[in-house]
Image (tube, rainbow, N blue to C red):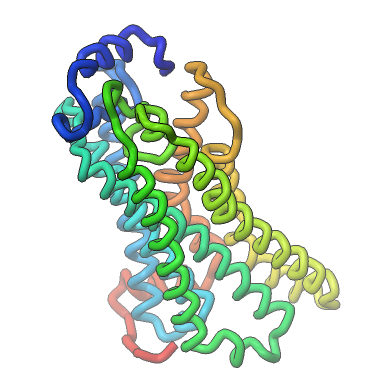
Amino acid sequence: IGESHPKFLSLTSGLMAGGNQSSVFEFLLWGLSEQPEQQHRLFLLFLWMYLVTVAGNLLIILAIGTDTRLHTPMYFFLASLSCADILFISTTVPKALVNIQTQNRSISYVECLTQLYFFLTFGDMDIFILTTMAYDRYVAICHPLHYTMVMSRRCCIILVTACWTLTSLVAMTHTFLIFRLSFCSKKIIPDFFCDLGPLMKVSCSDTQVNERVLLFLGGAVILIPFGLILVSYIRIVSAILGVPSAQGRYKAFSTCGAHLAVVALFFGTVIRAYLWPSSSSSSSIGEDTAAVVMYTVVTPLLNPFIYSLRNKDMQGALGRLLRGKVSFSCGQ
């Protein structure tokens, strides 16, 4: 819905006299739809997706943590991805559900910046964990004799810790730059959560620094990991094609197929939302919203299914977990 929409303009005019954020510490989230008949269906749909996402990723974490057969680097990173996905979707969807149910679109200034920080942290965490998983598959397939030594327990913990540290620093940088901005009049955010682009659009300050940091730092956070994943899989495919056994090639491809599907879905929608130029037309804004919903809600929802549908080890662990036949161990 574009800014020329009459309802958007009416909401905007109602806030014109609000002053800056020193007097009114809140924004209005535009949401996903203004149609009253769609609100109930949107609430049920997003509630269902949220519950399934949390339950599915939680089952993945429990299955990996309680089954000694899955105490390997690949599943350790998968559990980390599931944890990040639960936190990622919990940053945005619960607030959207509350807003739909109560018909109250307001979000306080502090709550908005807090949501922004954690959204960026957990979103970037997904990117870095997917990159780490690609590196793990590269070492396993291209350097199998050195795999145990390279991907040791200590190395895995260091990699995940480094991912959390980097994402926190990136999110802190963007949030601090948003904190420096003033919001004088139009404080309607054309989205269902607080994100960098929409916040910069409603600011009355000079956002050149924010835009440049978003372009270079944000672009680096997205494109460098994406490039590393592509290089890893080019090497992986070359190594797999050199395997003489057809069964060996199939097994190697099957272990990488799920990860490639998640990478394609996640990075495709992230690049469309942040790095693809969009106009201010209503159709373009609708496409941006669709891309945002895909990587913030749909991808965390699909991850447990993608990783478990063709993975016999994961299916077996989930079956044993649901039947209560689990074994705890601190070993990897």
